[in-house]
Length: 94
Image 1 (cartoon, one colour):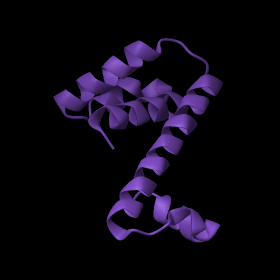
Image 2 (tube, one colour; image 1 turned 180 degrees about the vertical axis):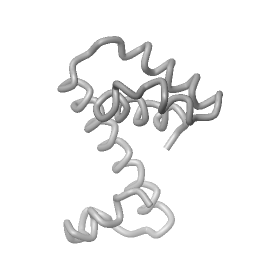
Image 3 (cartoon, helix red, strand yellow; image 1 turned 90 degrees about the horizontal axis):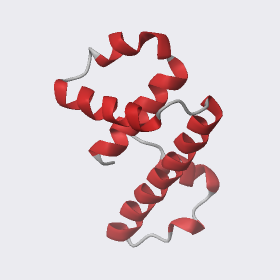
Image 4 (cartoon, one colour; image 1 turned 60 degrees about the vertical axis):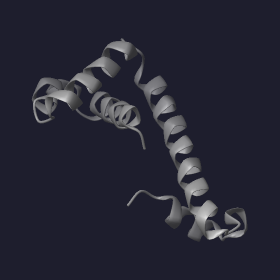
């Protein structure tokens, strides 16, 4: 996951879970991370919670696809033949 993706995920979670504590939570981040998240927050503007959830879901699916590709490449495993339960377990972030 790239730094920008981390900032985007954090910004989305912040807006969906704790928008009233934005300043307090941003203060916990390093200066560099705070600047990245604030940049994402400015880019988001005032979109609806539903749109944020949709964007968050799309980003998560992209991350799962990326993890799947990283898993298949070195192991040579055909991942789409794995059971759904194994696929879900291997696709989750560790």
